[in-house]
Amino acid sequence: MLSQRVKNLTPYVPGEQPQDRQYLKLNTNENPYPPTPKIEGFIKEFNIEKLRLYPDPLANNLREKIAQRYMVGKENVFVGNGSDEVLSFAFYAFFDSSMGKLLFPNFTYSFYPVYCDFYSIDYDKVPLNTDFSVNINGFLNGEKSCGIIFPNPNAPTGILLSIDDLNNLLERYPKDRVVIIDEAYIDFGGQSAVSLIVRYKNLLVIRTFSKSMSLAGLRLGFAIGDKKLIETLFAVKDSFNSYPIDMLALKIGEIAIEDEDYYRSTTEKIINNRSKLSDELEKIGWEVLPSQANFIFTKKHGVTGQKVYETLKNKGVLVRYFNIEGIKDFVRITIGTKEQLGILLKEVQKCFSGK
Ligand code: PMP
Image (tube, rainbow, N blue to C red; front, side, top):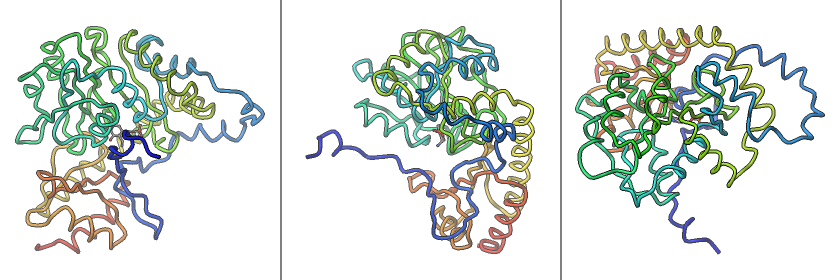
Protein backbone atom coordinates (compact mmCIF):
# COMPACT_ATOMS: atom_id res chain seq x y z
CA MET A 1 0.00 0.00 0.00
CA LEU A 2 2.85 2.39 0.76
CA SER A 3 5.44 3.50 -1.75
CA GLN A 4 9.08 2.60 -1.15
CA ARG A 5 9.79 6.35 -1.15
CA VAL A 6 7.54 7.02 1.80
CA LYS A 7 8.86 4.05 3.78
CA ASN A 8 12.31 5.60 3.72
CA LEU A 9 11.28 9.06 4.93
CA THR A 10 12.62 10.54 8.17
CA PRO A 11 10.47 13.64 8.68
CA TYR A 12 11.65 16.85 10.31
CA VAL A 13 10.42 17.30 13.89
CA PRO A 14 9.47 20.91 14.64
CA GLY A 15 9.79 22.37 18.13
CA GLU A 16 6.98 21.11 20.33
CA GLN A 17 3.71 23.04 20.70
CA PRO A 18 2.27 21.24 23.75
CA GLN A 19 -1.34 21.88 24.75
CA ASP A 20 -1.32 20.28 28.24
CA ARG A 21 -0.76 23.58 30.04
CA GLN A 22 0.27 27.15 29.35
CA TYR A 23 3.99 27.42 28.75
CA LEU A 24 6.30 30.33 28.32
CA LYS A 25 7.36 29.36 24.80
CA LEU A 26 11.00 30.08 24.13
CA ASN A 27 11.55 27.02 21.93
CA THR A 28 10.63 27.79 18.29
CA ASN A 29 12.15 31.22 17.65
CA GLU A 30 8.78 32.88 17.30
CA ASN A 31 8.73 36.65 17.77
CA PRO A 32 7.30 37.70 21.16
CA TYR A 33 5.94 40.98 19.76
CA PRO A 34 2.79 41.15 17.61
CA PRO A 35 2.95 41.82 13.86
CA THR A 36 2.29 45.34 12.54
CA PRO A 37 -1.02 46.71 13.87
CA LYS A 38 -1.85 47.82 10.31
CA ILE A 39 -2.96 44.24 9.56
CA GLU A 40 -5.99 44.54 11.81
CA GLY A 41 -7.81 47.16 9.74
CA PHE A 42 -7.28 45.14 6.58
CA ILE A 43 -8.71 41.95 8.10
CA LYS A 44 -11.74 43.77 9.52
CA GLU A 45 -12.56 45.36 6.18
CA PHE A 46 -11.72 42.42 3.92
CA ASN A 47 -14.58 41.60 1.57
CA ILE A 48 -15.01 37.85 1.98
CA GLU A 49 -16.84 37.69 -1.34
CA LYS A 50 -13.35 37.89 -2.88
CA LEU A 51 -12.50 34.45 -1.53
CA ARG A 52 -14.49 32.96 -4.43
CA LEU A 53 -11.55 33.69 -6.65
CA TYR A 54 -8.14 32.09 -6.85
CA PRO A 55 -5.22 34.21 -5.65
CA ASP A 56 -2.60 35.59 -8.06
CA PRO A 57 -0.37 32.58 -8.91
CA LEU A 58 2.53 34.93 -9.63
CA ALA A 59 2.09 36.94 -6.40
CA ASN A 60 2.86 40.03 -8.48
CA ASN A 61 1.96 42.77 -5.99
CA LEU A 62 3.77 41.18 -3.08
CA ARG A 63 6.84 40.45 -5.19
CA GLU A 64 6.85 44.07 -6.38
CA LYS A 65 6.79 45.34 -2.79
CA ILE A 66 9.54 42.94 -1.70
CA ALA A 67 11.60 44.03 -4.72
CA GLN A 68 11.21 47.71 -3.78
CA ARG A 69 12.21 47.05 -0.21
CA TYR A 70 15.41 45.19 -1.17
CA MET A 71 16.18 47.31 -4.24
CA VAL A 72 16.05 44.46 -6.74
CA GLY A 73 13.71 43.75 -9.67
CA LYS A 74 10.44 41.85 -9.31
CA GLU A 75 11.96 39.22 -11.59
CA ASN A 76 14.53 38.60 -8.83
CA VAL A 77 11.89 37.64 -6.25
CA PHE A 78 10.07 34.36 -5.62
CA VAL A 79 7.54 33.89 -2.80
CA GLY A 80 6.36 30.69 -1.16
CA ASN A 81 4.30 29.21 1.64
CA GLY A 82 6.87 29.79 4.37
CA SER A 83 10.60 29.69 3.69
CA ASP A 84 10.46 25.94 4.34
CA GLU A 85 8.52 25.59 1.10
CA VAL A 86 10.90 27.91 -0.75
CA LEU A 87 13.81 25.82 0.55
CA SER A 88 12.12 22.63 -0.57
CA PHE A 89 11.60 23.98 -4.12
CA ALA A 90 15.19 25.21 -4.19
CA PHE A 91 16.59 21.82 -3.16
CA TYR A 92 14.57 20.22 -5.95
CA ALA A 93 15.56 22.86 -8.48
CA PHE A 94 19.30 23.21 -7.90
CA PHE A 95 20.88 20.26 -6.14
CA ASP A 96 21.63 17.09 -8.03
CA SER A 97 23.94 14.33 -6.85
CA SER A 98 25.15 13.65 -10.38
CA MET A 99 27.10 16.91 -9.96
CA GLY A 100 28.55 16.00 -6.56
CA LYS A 101 27.29 16.12 -3.00
CA LEU A 102 25.49 19.01 -1.37
CA LEU A 103 27.47 20.62 1.46
CA PHE A 104 26.13 22.13 4.67
CA PRO A 105 27.53 22.59 8.19
CA ASN A 106 27.44 19.62 10.58
CA PHE A 107 25.36 21.61 13.05
CA THR A 108 22.70 23.57 11.22
CA TYR A 109 18.99 23.73 10.39
CA SER A 110 17.90 20.12 10.70
CA PHE A 111 15.45 20.35 7.80
CA TYR A 112 18.30 20.31 5.25
CA PRO A 113 19.09 16.58 5.51
CA VAL A 114 15.34 15.87 5.44
CA TYR A 115 14.96 17.61 2.06
CA CYS A 116 18.03 15.74 0.85
CA ASP A 117 16.44 12.41 1.72
CA PHE A 118 13.15 13.48 0.20
CA TYR A 119 14.77 14.38 -3.13
CA SER A 120 17.55 11.73 -3.02
CA ILE A 121 20.36 14.27 -2.84
CA ASP A 122 23.65 13.02 -1.37
CA TYR A 123 25.22 15.36 1.13
CA ASP A 124 28.28 15.91 3.28
CA LYS A 125 28.30 17.72 6.58
CA VAL A 126 31.19 20.16 6.95
CA PRO A 127 32.42 20.47 10.56
CA LEU A 128 32.10 23.89 12.18
CA ASN A 129 35.27 25.58 13.44
CA THR A 130 36.12 24.96 17.09
CA ASP A 131 34.47 28.28 18.03
CA PHE A 132 31.26 26.95 16.35
CA SER A 133 31.50 29.38 13.41
CA VAL A 134 30.80 28.10 9.87
CA ASN A 135 34.00 26.91 8.19
CA ILE A 136 34.17 28.42 4.71
CA ASN A 137 37.35 26.60 3.73
CA GLY A 138 35.57 23.34 4.55
CA PHE A 139 33.16 24.08 1.68
CA LEU A 140 36.00 24.67 -0.77
CA ASN A 141 38.33 21.79 -0.04
CA GLY A 142 37.76 18.26 -1.15
CA GLU A 143 35.66 16.79 -3.93
CA LYS A 144 33.49 18.86 -6.21
CA SER A 145 30.10 19.55 -4.63
CA CYS A 146 26.73 20.20 -6.31
CA GLY A 147 26.00 23.20 -4.10
CA ILE A 148 26.21 24.73 -0.65
CA ILE A 149 23.54 25.77 1.82
CA PHE A 150 23.80 27.32 5.27
CA PRO A 151 21.85 29.80 7.36
CA ASN A 152 23.44 33.15 8.13
CA PRO A 153 23.42 33.61 11.07
CA ASN A 154 23.65 29.86 11.52
CA ALA A 155 21.05 27.93 13.51
CA PRO A 156 21.14 26.76 16.25
CA THR A 157 24.39 28.60 17.12
CA GLY A 158 23.32 32.13 16.13
CA ILE A 159 26.84 32.85 14.88
CA LEU A 160 27.10 35.19 11.88
CA LEU A 161 29.49 35.21 8.92
CA SER A 162 30.51 38.66 7.66
CA ILE A 163 29.83 39.88 4.12
CA ASP A 164 33.60 39.64 3.51
CA ASP A 165 33.50 35.96 4.41
CA LEU A 166 30.53 35.40 2.07
CA ASN A 167 32.26 37.28 -0.74
CA ASN A 168 35.36 35.21 -0.21
CA LEU A 169 33.34 31.99 -0.43
CA LEU A 170 31.36 33.05 -3.51
CA GLU A 171 34.48 34.30 -5.27
CA ARG A 172 36.21 30.95 -4.87
CA TYR A 173 33.24 28.63 -5.47
CA PRO A 174 32.40 27.38 -9.02
CA LYS A 175 29.89 29.70 -10.64
CA ASP A 176 27.87 26.86 -12.17
CA ARG A 177 26.72 25.57 -8.72
CA VAL A 178 24.16 27.24 -6.53
CA VAL A 179 24.96 28.66 -3.09
CA ILE A 180 21.91 29.22 -0.87
CA ILE A 181 22.18 31.55 2.08
CA ASP A 182 19.21 31.05 4.38
CA GLU A 183 18.69 34.45 6.00
CA ALA A 184 15.81 33.48 8.30
CA TYR A 185 17.46 35.40 11.17
CA ILE A 186 19.48 38.09 9.35
CA ASP A 187 17.40 41.04 10.57
CA PHE A 188 18.55 40.51 14.16
CA GLY A 189 22.04 41.91 13.61
CA GLY A 190 23.55 40.72 10.34
CA GLN A 191 24.21 42.28 6.96
CA SER A 192 22.18 40.68 4.17
CA ALA A 193 23.87 39.09 1.17
CA VAL A 194 21.10 40.37 -1.14
CA SER A 195 23.47 43.02 -2.56
CA LEU A 196 25.71 40.21 -3.85
CA ILE A 197 23.13 38.66 -6.19
CA VAL A 198 24.14 41.01 -9.02
CA ARG A 199 27.75 39.85 -8.89
CA TYR A 200 27.02 36.16 -8.20
CA LYS A 201 24.32 34.75 -10.46
CA ASN A 202 24.60 31.46 -8.57
CA LEU A 203 23.61 32.99 -5.21
CA LEU A 204 20.09 32.51 -3.85
CA VAL A 205 19.13 34.31 -0.64
CA ILE A 206 16.10 32.91 1.21
CA ARG A 207 14.16 34.95 3.76
CA THR A 208 11.06 34.56 5.89
CA PHE A 209 8.18 36.62 7.29
CA SER A 210 8.11 34.31 10.34
CA LYS A 211 10.81 35.85 12.51
CA SER A 212 11.49 39.60 12.34
CA MET A 213 8.02 40.25 10.89
CA SER A 214 6.24 38.18 13.58
CA LEU A 215 4.16 36.21 11.03
CA ALA A 216 5.08 32.57 11.64
CA GLY A 217 1.37 31.69 11.60
CA LEU A 218 0.82 33.21 8.16
CA ARG A 219 3.36 31.05 6.27
CA LEU A 220 5.25 33.36 3.93
CA GLY A 221 8.83 33.17 2.75
CA PHE A 222 10.75 34.44 -0.26
CA ALA A 223 13.89 34.03 -2.30
CA ILE A 224 16.00 36.70 -3.98
CA GLY A 225 18.41 35.83 -6.76
CA ASP A 226 19.22 36.05 -10.44
CA LYS A 227 16.23 35.99 -12.82
CA LYS A 228 17.15 32.53 -14.12
CA LEU A 229 17.15 31.02 -10.62
CA ILE A 230 13.78 32.64 -9.90
CA GLU A 231 12.27 31.37 -13.16
CA THR A 232 13.42 27.87 -12.23
CA LEU A 233 11.74 28.13 -8.83
CA PHE A 234 8.50 29.12 -10.57
CA ALA A 235 8.81 26.09 -12.85
CA VAL A 236 9.13 23.83 -9.79
CA LYS A 237 6.26 25.54 -7.97
CA ASP A 238 4.01 25.24 -11.01
CA SER A 239 4.75 21.53 -11.19
CA PHE A 240 3.50 21.12 -7.64
CA ASN A 241 0.88 23.74 -6.69
CA SER A 242 -0.17 26.82 -8.65
CA TYR A 243 -1.51 28.67 -5.61
CA PRO A 244 0.63 28.01 -2.54
CA ILE A 245 -0.09 31.46 -1.09
CA ASP A 246 -3.65 32.44 -0.31
CA MET A 247 -5.18 35.82 -1.00
CA LEU A 248 -5.10 36.96 2.64
CA ALA A 249 -1.46 36.00 3.10
CA LEU A 250 -0.48 37.86 -0.07
CA LYS A 251 -2.10 41.07 1.12
CA ILE A 252 -0.91 40.79 4.73
CA GLY A 253 2.59 40.21 3.40
CA GLU A 254 2.36 43.47 1.44
CA ILE A 255 1.26 45.38 4.54
CA ALA A 256 4.04 43.86 6.63
CA ILE A 257 6.88 44.43 4.19
CA GLU A 258 5.95 48.11 3.94
CA ASP A 259 5.98 48.77 7.70
CA GLU A 260 9.74 48.87 8.08
CA ASP A 261 9.67 51.38 10.97
CA TYR A 262 7.48 49.16 13.13
CA TYR A 263 9.67 46.10 12.61
CA ARG A 264 12.83 48.07 13.19
CA SER A 265 11.55 48.98 16.65
CA THR A 266 10.53 45.42 17.62
CA THR A 267 13.82 44.05 16.27
CA GLU A 268 15.79 46.58 18.33
CA LYS A 269 13.95 45.41 21.44
CA ILE A 270 14.88 41.81 20.68
CA ILE A 271 18.53 42.74 20.14
CA ASN A 272 18.58 44.58 23.50
CA ASN A 273 16.87 41.70 25.27
CA ARG A 274 19.36 39.27 23.74
CA SER A 275 22.31 41.21 24.99
CA LYS A 276 20.82 41.53 28.50
CA LEU A 277 19.97 37.82 28.69
CA SER A 278 23.44 36.85 27.47
CA ASP A 279 25.09 39.12 30.06
CA GLU A 280 22.93 37.82 32.90
CA LEU A 281 23.57 34.18 32.00
CA GLU A 282 27.32 34.77 31.70
CA LYS A 283 27.32 36.44 35.11
CA ILE A 284 26.01 33.21 36.64
CA GLY A 285 28.53 31.02 34.87
CA TRP A 286 26.76 30.00 31.64
CA GLU A 287 28.64 29.94 28.34
CA VAL A 288 26.75 31.84 25.65
CA LEU A 289 27.79 31.71 21.98
CA PRO A 290 27.85 35.18 20.33
CA SER A 291 24.44 35.35 18.64
CA GLN A 292 23.14 37.69 15.95
CA ALA A 293 19.80 35.88 15.84
CA ASN A 294 16.57 35.97 17.89
CA PHE A 295 17.86 33.12 20.05
CA ILE A 296 20.95 32.19 22.00
CA PHE A 297 22.77 28.88 22.26
CA THR A 298 24.01 28.40 25.79
CA LYS A 299 25.27 25.81 28.26
CA LYS A 300 26.16 25.40 31.88
CA HIS A 301 29.23 23.34 32.59
CA GLY A 302 28.31 19.96 34.08
CA VAL A 303 24.61 20.04 33.15
CA THR A 304 23.29 18.42 29.96
CA GLY A 305 20.97 20.26 27.60
CA GLN A 306 18.34 17.62 28.24
CA LYS A 307 18.48 18.26 31.97
CA VAL A 308 18.09 22.00 31.48
CA TYR A 309 15.20 21.44 29.06
CA GLU A 310 13.38 19.00 31.38
CA THR A 311 13.88 21.11 34.49
CA LEU A 312 12.63 24.27 32.83
CA LYS A 313 9.70 22.45 31.20
CA ASN A 314 8.60 21.35 34.65
CA LYS A 315 8.58 24.99 35.63
CA GLY A 316 6.47 25.91 32.59
CA VAL A 317 9.28 27.29 30.44
CA LEU A 318 9.99 25.65 27.07
CA VAL A 319 13.44 25.82 25.51
CA ARG A 320 14.94 23.53 22.87
CA TYR A 321 17.79 21.06 23.10
CA PHE A 322 19.25 18.80 20.43
CA ASN A 323 20.16 15.24 21.26
CA ILE A 324 23.10 15.35 18.85
CA GLU A 325 26.70 14.52 19.80
CA GLY A 326 28.75 17.72 19.88
CA ILE A 327 25.92 20.08 20.89
CA LYS A 328 24.17 17.96 23.53
CA ASP A 329 25.24 20.26 26.35
CA PHE A 330 23.56 23.30 24.87
CA VAL A 331 20.04 24.62 24.91
CA ARG A 332 18.62 27.08 22.42
CA ILE A 333 16.59 29.85 24.01
CA THR A 334 14.38 32.13 21.92
CA ILE A 335 14.61 35.79 22.86
CA GLY A 336 11.31 36.84 24.42
CA THR A 337 10.11 40.08 25.98
CA LYS A 338 11.95 41.57 28.96
CA GLU A 339 9.26 40.18 31.27
CA GLN A 340 9.47 36.68 29.77
CA LEU A 341 13.23 36.63 30.08
CA GLY A 342 12.92 37.80 33.69
CA ILE A 343 10.80 34.71 34.43
CA LEU A 344 13.28 32.46 32.61
CA LEU A 345 16.26 33.91 34.47
CA LYS A 346 14.55 33.51 37.83
CA GLU A 347 13.93 29.83 37.13
CA VAL A 348 17.46 29.30 35.81
CA GLN A 349 18.92 30.90 38.94
CA LYS A 350 16.67 28.85 41.24
CA CYS A 351 17.23 25.53 39.48
CA PHE A 352 20.88 25.64 38.49
CA SER A 353 22.78 27.86 40.90
CA GLY A 354 25.75 26.03 42.30
CA LYS A 355 25.33 22.98 40.03
N1 PMP B 1 15.40 28.41 7.96
C1 PMP B 1 15.83 28.34 9.23
C2 PMP B 1 17.29 28.38 9.51
C3 PMP B 1 14.90 28.22 10.27
O1 PMP B 1 15.32 28.12 11.54
C4 PMP B 1 13.52 28.21 9.98
C5 PMP B 1 12.49 28.12 11.09
N2 PMP B 1 12.26 26.85 11.57
C6 PMP B 1 13.13 28.24 8.64
C7 PMP B 1 14.10 28.37 7.66
C8 PMP B 1 11.69 28.12 8.22
O2 PMP B 1 10.92 29.20 8.52
P1 PMP B 1 9.49 29.41 7.89
O3 PMP B 1 9.10 28.18 7.13
O4 PMP B 1 8.58 29.69 9.04
O5 PMP B 1 9.61 30.59 6.96
